[in-house]
Length: 566
Image 1 (cartoon, one colour):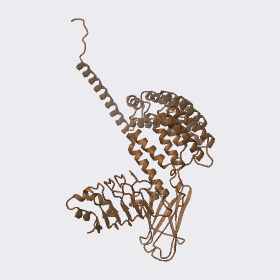
Image 2 (cartoon, rainbow, N blue to C red):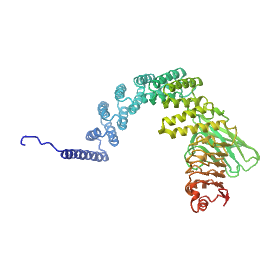
Image 3 (cartoon, rainbow, N blue to C red):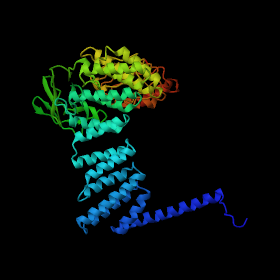
Image 4 (tube, rainbow, N blue to C red):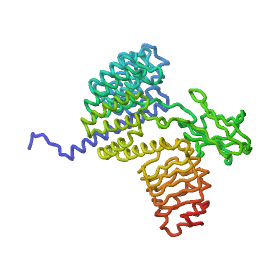
């Protein structure tokens, strides 16, 4: 046995590794403790720079150490010359590059590099572009590096034309480079702006981009990058803020305004003028919260609307694009008046693909249908066909789009709830578009809806029927329907109704044959003080002992429950 090397057992090896890790941890903790003490004492010296470097070399995501390092450099500026600082920053860039090699997706390292380049007396931006090129060769989807490249491009005033060419080269080498497609969407409006559409792209360039996207998804139909870019090419511009409709109610002494975009009461500049005189009242959301909403309520001063004489009311909102407004006339002897947009039904719900010209939409639909014939089970091709059909003519293509949605559900079962909601949205939009002009009754019953969208288009609805659908909740902002008097939601699977709040005109609610299990679920209705008729027959709560007493305790304003007077 003499003269032979002793082979360590597994247990001995594990113990040795444990001791080694423990020793490293003790050194690490001692160094960080020393650095926190030095930072507390405002010691900004070479030792601190060296110690932070050692720590960050092992843990480059230690943000506090990077911040301390910034403080050290700022202190050095007071005593060192520009040339000395240039060298220190140059060394810092080399150190950062070392950190990036071991952790190329570190937020802290890339952010610190931005700070260093902004502080350097003589930054070399071209070298930073080359650095980006190198790291994007390692990983072309490293969005941290793409963000840093955009920072460098802004500081170096690199023409967007050059960056567009760079993105083209990256896409040509790999169609699956999502970051490059995204970067391209930011560059095209700068290189080929559309004079008629802000943030739009000139038509000739747009058609070339369609061809590039088609080449990509015909080459690899299952890669989602090109499909998302294709959706962007056909995308719509952001809608302008406007006052979509007004409703003035004399008995409630208030005005309800619906906006095309969400606004916040505390920051919005809103004015109400009655008969040429500015009215000082109170704006608030339906729930009284300072949140972003599309429906706001203005409470007139007491007796402001008590007169039976004709009253002219004008509401304005100050936006970045200037004043927008809407007016209405409350006639003598009338209790209410409304004023709303007279948009054509086909434009009521602007499809997310509706900005593109109809000829382009038809051409793209034909291309996607060709790909669908070649790849009948490709969900991206089917989804694009559906959206293009919706953009061209949602009513004509209704049956086909719903068939495609059903196919998507079977192909992509993990997202079946998304497709169910998508089909529900299409059905709801078509129903609203086909409803008679000026009607205040909306029947959405028996359509298999799993969700209810576009409540901002229903603020003048008085009667809403949601019966015989597949709804599981009314936690949606039903309170936007400030004119609603009757709500029917029988034969669903509704378990909660938290969205049914603060609706002063609501008088009757029918929730027969749902899944309401406790009387407390109905608590939101306490804020709807005019509700006097409630139908709950067929809910689990009805089988509980003392059910009626519980309902009366929660909702003392109820006078008729399940057809019987209380």
